[in-house]
Length: 584
Ligand SMILES: Nc1ncnc2c1ncn2[C@@H]1O[C@H](COP(=O)(O)OP(=O)(O)OP(=O)(O)O)[C@@H](O)[C@H]1O
Image (cartoon, rainbow, N blue to C red; front, side):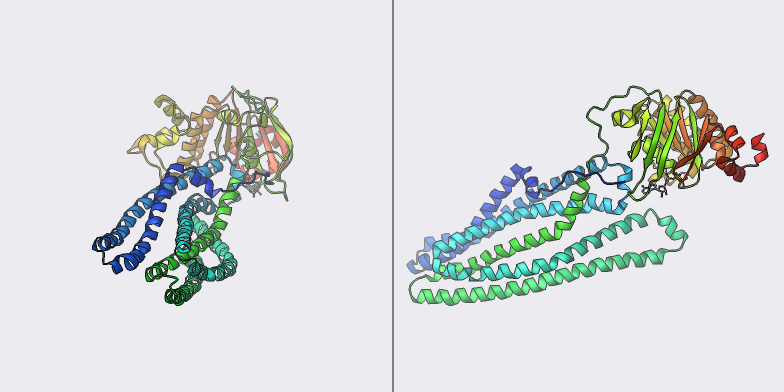
């Protein structure tokens, strides 16, 4: 299925900060204070050496020493406060990013999402959001560094502009170094992001697949596979960290010692020529590493931004998908459908290369019970998917009560359609909660009625905790047939006007299937029912049977008509039943 062109989505990280103005302002104030305090200490030191000491002014001396002692404590307290604010902002941004992405995912069709691996989606929903929000708070540190850089710069220039000019000598060198390195590291960042995704996918597959792993004794293979993925990730991370810390650290130390030596040499020269005081030189020895430290941190922030880029792109890619579960501007509401469904030359494919359904046309009258059978992979479930509006026909159209399906408000339409899918999904909640999920306002009587219709009551009555039994992940504590009956009861509780059942009884014994069918036919005699089945017994009583093969309707008619035709259906039946008993 071709991807619809979505609007470009760009994550504006600054906007996130803007949305937390109060906290940002507080954080900024705290940062200004801490940066200011950081500048005051060296200034007090120079004051102590140049003014208090020569004058032997005890009061001034005590004041300077007290200031030098108290400022770090104040700094620490204020920084702790700032950290609390920052982590608060970070949590809020994580929640917002996750929620925004979840909201988007819920607007996409399962067909679109089937192109992605589950682990990849979970990774985006959790880790990617965490990484992004962590970076957003690092941006606050970036402001801190800019302020520190400007503050220290201004104080240095005011103190001694000549020495300040010499100090700046190393700045272009630093810019050049980082410029070269950043370009080199960029590829590694991408590889790390891919390796992370691979591990996410592996772990989300291996846990639900535990039964398969153990049955086929592939534990060792999975351990080795997991180790291999981890090794790859660790190797890339180590390589990057080694380069970042070793090359970065080496350059930083070199630059630090050279600039400090130059400051000392030039400073002593200026002192000899009475162009500078000893106190000022002392202050410079503290300011210079702080000045370059701020520049260094800004580059580190830039590198972190680079590292985060693939993650941001992963997030944006998902957000760029156009919403699929939205209505046309003039969509009409649907009070209660009669249930007449018409496929008019419908073609559909999941990818551009191949059509799964080809020119499919049929009409279902209100209240008809339709069976769909055919070879595996022929497109039966795809017909159900289209009826649920998970995809749009590539050509042709589907009508409900004479109107295009797409012209109805989607939420309205889906209210009237009930599905029992082939691949049943149940929540790890109680039986009661699984039923209530589809109709929270249902009464106890309605739930019992749905359970009775789905032949589920015998199960509930035999469970020690009855309705309040927890059924495990995806209903793992239930048998296949029990899951199917619970899924049927759940759908019946919705009281849909159109009932779609995709292999609903494949795991049931013949007697239970018979009882269920009797019940369904009775309850749904005036409603439209479409049942996809491989077992022909399931649809034998249908008003009409559509035989789907390779994306086309090969035959259609009642069981008797199709048997008499001796075509595709007859061959299918021959494989399943004693032909003589059926024809008779
Ligand atoms: N989400 C998807 N993405 C890509 N291809 C898909 C997707 N779902 C189904 N297909 C392909 O579409 C074809 C028809 O699938 P469909 O599930 O409709 O067949 P079916 O007749 O219901 O088969 P079965 O009887 O085995 O359930 C298959 O070849 C299948 O591989």
